[in-house]
Every structure is written in C-alpha cells, then in structure tokens.
Length: 519
Image (cartoon, rainbow, N blue to C red; front, side, top):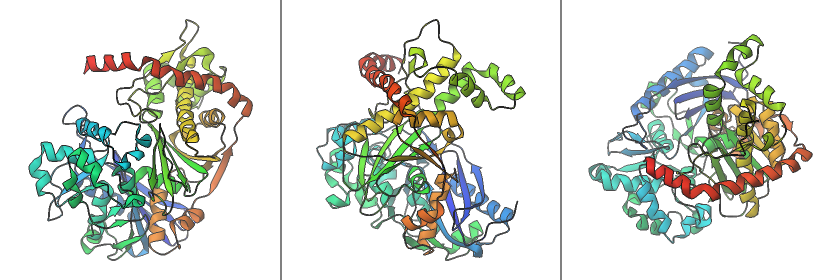
C-alpha cells in the first residue's frame, strides 16, 4: 500500500447484506484500508431470508485481521471501534449468549399477517408509518417477533433476548446487552417523547411480552458502551479494552458518514436501492414517508425516511438483459458499459419522448409501502428504442425520489441540499438528472464509502477523540463537488413527474390482482 495516513486511527465494522467489511480511518477522514468478507444468505421459503450469526463472526475475524495485516497496524494502534449492521435483522439469543436459530433478515417478509394487525392499531406509535396512513412493514421488528412467538414458540419462550443485528454485535464485542436508539426508534416504535416503548402497539400485535426480551439500556449513537472483551479481542487480533461506541443501522451510518446530522440536508444513499434520510427539529409525520423518529440519529432531533426498493437494480437489469451487445463497443472505446449507455441516453430530450417507466419492480417502500406494487411503463411507441428505455429508467428513479421529497415538503420538511453516496454517484449524467428533477443542489463527499466512514465517526466519538458525533462528522467528512440543478430543466421535468405520480394509483388494482393470481 502507499504511505499510510497519519493517526490516530479508528475501526469501523459494517455488516451489510452480502459481506462484513472492516475499515480503518484517521481523524480527518482519510481511508487507510478496508476488507470485505462475504457470507451467504439462505432462502428456506418464498419471502424468507436468513443468515448465520456464526458466519457473521467468522467473516468479521477475517476482515479485521486482513486490514491489520495489510496496514501493518496492531490492535494497540486502534483508538476506538464503531459499527453498523442491517436492520431489521432479528436474532434470538439464549441465556448463554448463543443464537437459537438463523437470523431473520431485513428483507424477510414472512410476517405479513402480523404486520396487518399493526395496521389496525390505534396506538400513537403508528405515526411513524406515514402519520398512521401507511401500511405496516413486515420487515419491522414487532411483526417478526410476533411471527416467532406464533410459529416457533419454543424458541420465543427460551430466548433471553430478541434483538436487532447491531445489538447482537454490541454483545459479541463487549459482553453488554444494549439497544441502539436508531433501531429502537426507526424499526421498533420506541418514542422518547411518548415515554419510550409503546406497549399498546405491541399488545395490539399480540406480542407485548417481547418487551421483556429487549435489553433495558437504550443508548444514543456514539456513546461508549464499554471496552472490547477479552474473548472478542483474542478472536479479532485487537486490544482488550479498546473503546467500543454504540452502533446503529447501516443506512443511518451512511447518513452520519455524509454529515447529515442537522436539519436542512438530506442524505441520498444509492445502490441497488435508494434511501432518503434527513433531520428535523420537529416531530413531523405525514402520508408517504416514515418517521419522524425521535432521537434516532441525534439526541433532540427527529429523523425522516423515504426509500425506493429498486433503483440501481433496475438499471443493472436493463444493462444485463437488453444491452449486453454494447459491452464490446464500450470496451473498444475504453468506456464502462454504463457510461456508453449514458452517452446514448444524453442525446435524447427530457422526458424520453413521452416514455415513462416507474421503478416499482420489487414493490414500493415509500410513498405507498406496497409490496405488491410492480413496474409500470406508459407512452411506448414504435419510435422508442433501447436508449429511450434506459433514459426512462434513470428518469423514473429520479421521479420516485422527487415524489418522496414532495411528500416530505407537504408535511413541512424543508430541504436545502442533498448529500449523496453510493453507486449512482459514479454517473455524472445521472446525478445531474437527480439535481434537475428535484431542483436541489447535490453534494458529493471525498469518501464515497459513507457507511464505513459513519461507523468510524461513531467510534471516534465513543473513544473521546471528539466531543460529539456531530463534531466528529464535521471534521471527518469533506465535500468534493457540488452539482447545481439546471432550473430550466427542472421546470420541464415537472410535467413528467406529475404524470409519473398520477399513473400508479390508476393501475394499482389490476396489478394487485395479477400479483395475487400468480402467487
């Protein structure tokens, strides 16, 4: 490796859907090294997804030792540890600290029936679901806990703790059981403004007793949990007693890694999906978005959330299935496959000459929270070709982001700028389109891996290297570029956004009928 950046150093641990990454950064946000170790997901039945917590731990051991080996650092050089994991990935733990069954992954939707009970609840906690207007998500914690109680009663009864993946990791690292406020408020309906846990909602779902299986301490992000245990230190090759900071959900770590820790900015985290996160000083709620979650990221603030299930995954689907013939041309011209597609799409006018494609290929998270939603194509003519389809997909994803932003604006949430990371930021063409459609400046940061950086920011705060998470983020996150919207293009796009928004409600019923027929 090249010359190592100056320390002190912190380690961030990122448990994603496909791999465990360990990363090392210094106090000005310079990346030192990272390594990812994959693990497998099993799908025992349609709609189910599970992983082994031992696979997680083994992957962590490999990743940590690899970054130490490649950098020449030792455990004594690591000043603090932060971490994140997927959510809601539910782990049932016995009285000896062992997982009793494979973890039920965030994408697992087996708890649809239990989520339906949540829809009928009159609890104030339901404001987190679109102000009480949106369906409950089968991904969220109470519904998976209820499924365990009803379908695996021995495991439910024998579990000492039933926790999110990030809180499983807290215990493995420190031997201390806590609940991170991020998982608690954003996926478990905890609301400090209303006294914390909401027993009436859990009672309506039929699983109030799971509240006794949740650790007592609910900790803010970045606060010290304790020192690295002797067992964990020996496994990972780190130093016993290294400060460990309270971690969180991976997407929210990305928000921190983009320094979106105060009102006025939104984090747009892109990849196979889009996640849209921001802070507000008021507990706003409204149709079409999640939250605002109390204290979920920063104490004394509230977090709003929107998301699109299929974004980059739809772009990849088109490239792989309908444009493989362009791979050779791209290689011969020294371009990436995507950049060649962008070149063709850029020659077309705004609106793809009347072709609109929405991105609901795997359902809709917001504004509809509709697992039976599917993609819709309108305006197709014999004039349209592959480049039209590609551009219409890119535009449709941007229209979906703007749809969510409009819902938030309707509830009074003002956004002055967007800060983005992830795969879409590799495309100047697509990011300019995001700015033009939303009419909002988009900032890109020097470190694209905002999730791992966010966990390192938590680790730095927890180790006392900064006075707060906000200070750590300010010192470790740096803007690399700002994409200003073309306001003439923005005005032209609004017609197409309106048509995009108008379409799905008109065809929802026949789409649901088709999905049910094929089930």
